[in-house]
Structure formats: structure tokens, C-alpha cells
Length: 369
Image 1 (tube, rainbow, N blue to C red):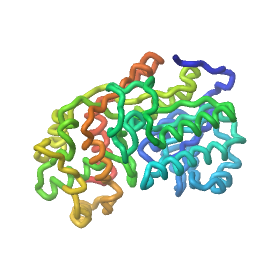
Image 2 (cartoon, rainbow, N blue to C red):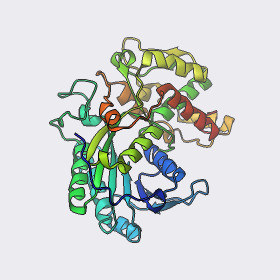
Image 3 (cartoon, helix red, strand yellow):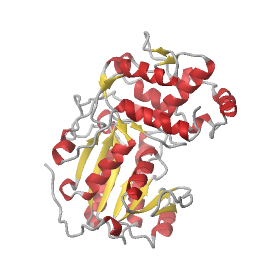
């Protein structure tokens, strides 16, 4: 059941200031774009900060380290955001370390903002909430698909749970509303991001075309054949803004996916056609990208030089391990959006279009030929 909160804090966009943690990532960059277009003042927090962009009026770069409380306090002592959008995470070797580091990042940021007039904090997580962490992906008890927000937590260590706990504890202390947004494999633009299937597949297809190789699906038979879904970064941004500004959605967790469903066995040939490469589907066993694309760094450097591409470092575009993990699952992954629909969110994306829009931007930015 959705709960309401008082609306007396509500204000116009011009009076609202949002802090976006992880502003240079896939989700964070999309949120910055959306808020800027709607007239918000945006504090774009990242480790390096960067410089102001005339194309994004109202966006103020903020350099701070989420793992360092002193860094955050110094950077934010004179800032007074009304809303926070938290999209950052730091991958560690074990889930115990993931919990320690990533829960601390949420705690550190909200502690550094104890002086701010916070109205709402939106936290991005994902479907590992239902499937378990990377080191125990789909190995333990799992709820039936489509995944519903009503499912209880799994009896395993999970940094998403720890982040939620920190968020709720801070909300209780500081008096703001919160929302949690569980996305499934976000499609979006972010050079240097650690989990980026869209750019990874674009890099794979580009190498296949340049080297006259087939475009081989790397994943499992289950993923090849089953119905699944994904999340466009722009839609995720709309969803987080919707929940952060509608008092009727306060203090709730929501799944967020595009709204369509597809099978990789149908989509893969269409992605191959876009790049002009020969598709190759599942054949007896997974063929991971970490094996297919091993030792491709030099080939990419030569391709980048030949086409005058903006990024010669393949590792800043492709994250083979993450796409292998997503497409290698031996479980069906499908998400229920009913809770958001009933609450009034009507955003929708066609996943194939989301991929192709991303590919078009990569070409426009001279990241693929």
C-alpha cells in the first residue's frame, strides 16, 4: 500500500536543488540531463567533479569522494539540496566488502547533508535484490517471476539491503521521504562505466565488423530463449523524478523496467543487422565475451586510429564480465511494473529502440565508427 506524506514542503522546480551522486554514470548522467532540462539546480557529484557545461544550465559540478566523510563534509557544507538521487556504487571483491563500502557511501553522504532541507532521497538499486549478489547469483532460493516488490529479502548478504537500511535510518533521523528504484540492466551512455551492456555490445559488434567475425551471443540457452526485459537510463531518470516529487509515492520501493518484453533470440539478429555483422546465436554452451574478446585491446586501438575514434581504450567502453554475468544466467529474469503503473507512472520505452538510440549517440560522439 502506498503511503502519503504532507505536501507543505512542495515547491516549484526553480526553488528545488537536487544532488545527484554518481553524476557521470549511466543513470546519474541521465538524471542530470532531465533535471537540467526541467529547470532544477543540480549538484552533480562525482569523484573528479569536472567543469561546468554550457549545454546544461544550472548544473554545478561537485568533486567529492563518497567513501571519505571529510571530503563530503568539505564539499557540501555550503550546499542545501532538497532532493538527492543516489546512483553510485563501488564494486568490491566480496559481498561482505560490498556491504561495508556501499552502505558507508550512503551513510556518509546523508550524514554530510544533515544540515540540508532534504525532502526526498531516491536510491537506485537493481534486480540483485531478488536474485542475490554476484557471488551467489541465482544460486539460492528465488521468488517466481515476474519479480514483485512485495517479495521478502533473500536470506543472504546483499549490499542493496544494507543501502536500504542506511537510507531508512537516515530518513527516520532527518525527516525526509525516500524511494528505492530496482532497475534491470540499464541501457545508457557513460564512458568508463563498470556495468554497461549497451556500450559493450556496440564494442563487440564493431570489433566483429572490423575483423570479419560473427556477432556471437555470449550467454546461456535460458537467456537466449526466455522472455526478459531491460531499463533505459532516460526512463529510469523519469521514474526516479516521478517518485521523488509525488507525495503519494513516499517511502516505497519500485521496480523500473521499460514496459516491453523480448527474447534475445529475436533481438540479437536485429542488433547484428544494425551493425552489418553476421549473427550467431546460442549453440550448445555459453561463449563468454571475456573469452571471445580476450586480447582485443590492440585491435581496438588500431580500429580507433583508423576511424579517428575518441576513445582508444577498449576497457572504458566495454565491460565483458558484466555482460557475461547478465546474459549467462540460467534463470528467467522478468519484472513486474504493476506497482508503478497503479501509482500513476506511465513511462515506456521499446528496448530495441533504446539500444539503437544509444548506438546512434556512440556514433555521434565518435566512439564507434
